Structure formats: C-alpha cells, structure tokens
Image (cartoon, rainbow, N blue to C red; front, side, top):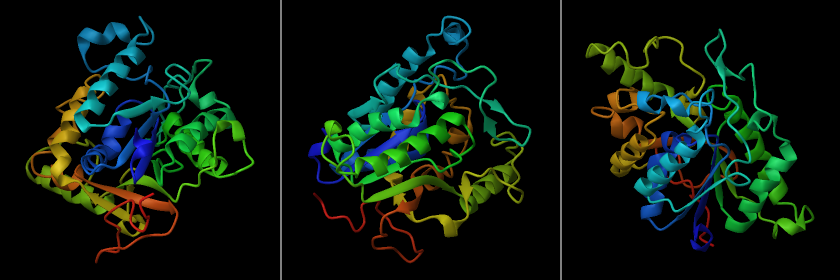
Length: 307
C-alpha cells in the first residue's frame, strides 16, 4: 500500500487518461524509487469521445458501456506505470462524467444535458468527504490536481480541483468527521502545468518540419490555451525523461481517448523527453524545498522529511 512508503503522493484526476497525460512520467519515476503513489479518479469518463470505430457502440447514447471499458483501460495504463493503488472517488460509479461542449472562445464548458449523478452536480462536501477518507488513510505529503480552470475548462476538471482543495482543508481539521480517520495535513499541494516556452519551441520545430496538423490552429508565436503557463509561474520540474516511454506506453492503453496519430506521439520523436518526460508543477500550498539554477524544485518532496 502507498501508505507504507516513506514519501507518498496523491493525485486527483477527473477521468481515466488524465492522470497519464498529466503526470504519467512522474508517477512511473516515483514508483521506481519506492515512493507511494495513489491515484483518485473522480469519474469513469462515460461521456468521452470514442476514437476506435469498432467500439462506438459503447457510447453514452447507445449501450452506455464506455465507463466500464475505460476502467479496464485505466487498469492497463496503471500496470504500465507500476501504480498499484488507484481508486474511484466514492467507489466506481459514484459520480458520472458530466460531458462537455466547446465554448465559442475555445475552452470547454458544461454540456447542455447533464446526468443526474454527474460529477459537476456533486455536493461539494459529500465529494470532499470521500477524498478526506483517502487522505487520512494514505497520509500523503504531496497532492497534485488541476488549477481552478481545470486546465481547459472541463467541468469535471474544475470540480476535481474544488473537491481536492476543499478535502485538503477538511482532512487537516482534527475535530472534523473523526469517523473518517485521524486528521492529516498535506504538506504541499501542486497544480499540474505545462511550459509556454517549451510548447512554443516544440510547435516551431513541428511547423518547420512541415507538420501543420499537430495542435492545429496553434501558432508558435500566437496566443496559447490557458494550461500553458509562463515559466515564472512554475515551481517544480520532475525530470522523468527515463520514463517517457512508460508514459507513452500507458497512453496507448487509453486507446478510446488517445490516438497514436495525436500530438503526444507526434512530439514524441524529437520533443518527447522534453515535453512529456519532464513534467511541471505550480506550488500552491507549502514551502518550497531546494531549487536549482532555474529557480525550480526538482522533486515534489523537496524539503519534506520521509515519514
């Protein structure tokens, strides 16, 4: 169990595949180092698109079997990364993928029709209590989740952020819900991030090589989506370049959602280790540990004694 390791990381994500896209290399690195890694996934991604034509019958408006299938994809991806402690918030099926649509401004917003038990409609305290139970059991020193915009506006990403940040506070209160376990104060909280300067460099090289379809519509010198952050916003870089291939192998297991023709794999040949193997974070709670010449920590557990 992750709770027996001296250093323990908890990641809170919205759907299967988000964890691997965001922090797959970090997870594989920390597992290899003997650190505890726990992943909490808030929904099964029932409303996701399906990139495999022969599985289109699983769609929500047909057999509605995508969530169960993505649960299997998550199993396979976690096996690639070596993560053995992964759970669904409140148990599988407690919260359903809320779905999404695109706003005219280019970011995601809630879909028009939302299921009764959609995560976006979850009671915040109830959902946070499910996570408080995990926090008090695992006793992580570090938690990773999304920023307040959920990266690109997906309602489930935003809700995962809200639930995670609230649960961090509640879990630390000794007098709060003693039945959920002894209080635990998480030392450091990070939001996942991507470097604006690095993606511009990667895009520039792709465009110079004649690739105009990867991240189509994004100009190396133009405006970028909000999940790309200027370097001064970044606090930590985990160099897990040696685990880039594990991350990409895990991504392939999420086959209904991630295509090998997509940007992750288009960038993997010449930019893979830099873009996908060196994962970035913003510190939002806790004290920074030792930093390098670039002013960034190289380890999420920097400054935290093993306990």
